[in-house]
Amino acid sequence: MQRDQRVHDNWALLYAQQIALEKKVPLHVAFNLVPNFLEATIRQYGFMLKGLEEVEDELKRFNISFFLLSGNPEIEIPKFVYESDASALVTDFNPLKIVRQWKKSVAAKIEIQFHEVDAHNIVPCLAASDKLEFAAYTIRQKIHKLLPEFMDEFPSLKKMKTHNSANEKFDWLKIRNSLQINFDVHEVDWIAPGENSAQNSLEIFIKNKLVNYNDKRNDPNANAVSNLSPYLHFGHISAQRIALTILPMVENFESHKSFLEELIVRRELSDNFCYFNNNYDSFEGFPDWSKSSLNTHRNDRRDHLYSIEEFEQAKTHDELWNAAQLEMTLKGKMHGYMRIYWAKKILEWSGSPEEALKIAIYLNDKYEIDGRDPNGYAGIAWSIGGVHDRAWFERAVYGKIRYINYNGCAKKFDVKEYVKNNPKS
Ligand SMILES: Cc1cc2nc3c(=O)[nH]c(=O)nc-3n(C[C@H](O)[C@H](O)[C@H](O)COP(=O)(O)OP(=O)(O)OC[C@H]3O[C@@H](n4cnc5c(N)ncnc54)[C@H](O)[C@@H]3O)c2cc1C
Image (tube, protein in one colour):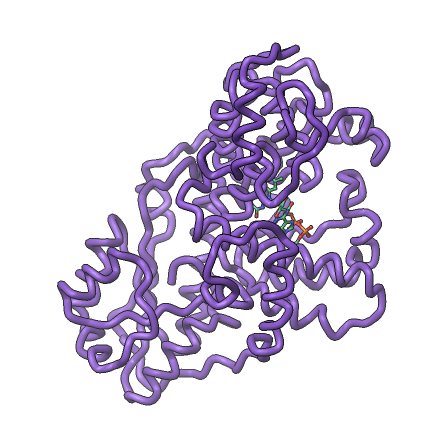
């Protein structure tokens, strides 16, 4: 279990259980904890560990053993499989697909087969498309065509007969203290981690907010968005469960439609971008029209130039940008519309598009609970590099990249209110 850290509505776990039941053998779940990862801090690790503790408890109710491995997964997972009884149980199945190169080499070394199940997307990334998609309109039709095939109701997880009694509860505090990460970025308490809280958040969203989603989702003062992205990132909730719940509701059709467009099409487009574009986090990953246009405007005069520290400490001249940065650093989740403004202004006030991209990814991954996600890399590449977008009117610094400004925001929502809601401390 790695990308989808939940017990229910998890196709990978259900598939593993089906095999275990057919073979009449116990079922083990292993999670490999990497002691540090990209810019992740205790804010993201804390959220993840609490979710995993819930996974451990819930699996126990189903007589499924949970193993927490720690270290390099390339070493720890084969070691675990080799050393545990599990290795003997899985040798004679046909592999569905082996995608990652390391899996192949590991599989060869320990002579077992891997079955990869995409439990994260509704239409699995590799089924949705076999190439890098140009924009939402090129992938939308493909996904809509395949949705009926994949939108099955999940079967319930069954209780296993046998249980590995050697499996004691982990000391989660000790695990937390062993992490080699930044503990200065504080955890947040407005959102509770785990599968149960994710389900509650979905219910609250449907009951109180969905009705206004279409009209108000771009207003950061309106509290009309779902706040499900941290749960989706860690797999505490399945996108398919969300879609299965919302699809049959026919009232407020426009809101359902626009929410499902974001949840399914935009989200799967981001996965497509990160899977098929090896340069998803660099200037080279931008489309040719954008690279050429940004190159033409490379030496344009910038009205403001800020260092990474000035950005990080919200010390720009712009109260709106500073408020967005503070929303992210203090709350751990910037509103979606503000993320666009935030990233585009970093392009405008940095020495080069490369530098802007580096700063935006660094800050996003360090402070957002939902950071280090394909949606983040795609969203930043869209804002700064025109990925999945089209060329707009040419202007200084931006070239043909879509432009946004303070006055544009002021026409959409009450900027002063947003600034007031996101003070320095
Ligand atoms: C510069 C920038 C950085 C971003 N960084 C991240 C990030 O680190 N992690 C992250 O998950 N998203 C990121 N996004 C995408 C989007 O802003 C967030 O997914 C959204 O704001 C999450 O809040 P929510 O769950 O309340 O959204 P809702 O509006 O309630 O949407 C529901 C779900 O739909 C999906 N979704 C919504 N908007 C988008 C989008 N534009 N692209 C892809 N999927 C979308 C998400 O899974 C989201 O949870 C970024 C966007 C931009 C422009």
